[in-house]
Length: 140
Image 1 (cartoon, helix red, strand yellow):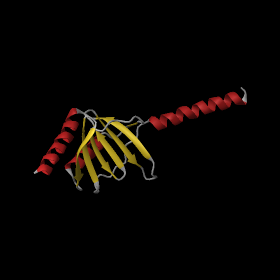
Image 2 (spheres, helix red, strand yellow):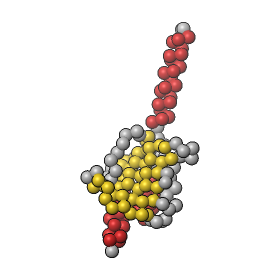
Image 3 (cartoon, rainbow, N blue to C red):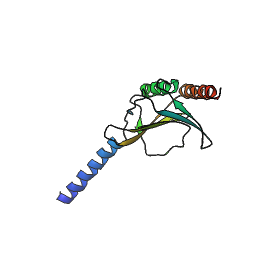
Image 4 (spheres, rainbow, N blue to C red):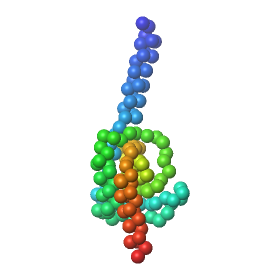
């Protein structure tokens, strides 16, 4: 074989291996136990009321439980998703939707990653109820 063919084959192998690691799963690195989070509920693509979430918020606890239950089930994605229930912190954005959760997070080197996993109806209902309760208590 000529050197050119070997170079092409080698490049193809590197491209395939690199693509596998890029699109493979990766559990998000989140620290939800600190302050500075806010949640916004979107309706028909428009942001609604924003809630400031204290340390230990039941919403953050529920999301933390979903992330823990989804260990090893995350996939990288570059697709942009319209927000439904958006929780934002300094180094992450968590978009909870009826059947999936999308996490954008910044790793220790400052790189941003986006991962996605499916959630079940019970998990979404739990998050939705917590948000509803928080909104009701804010209006009192």
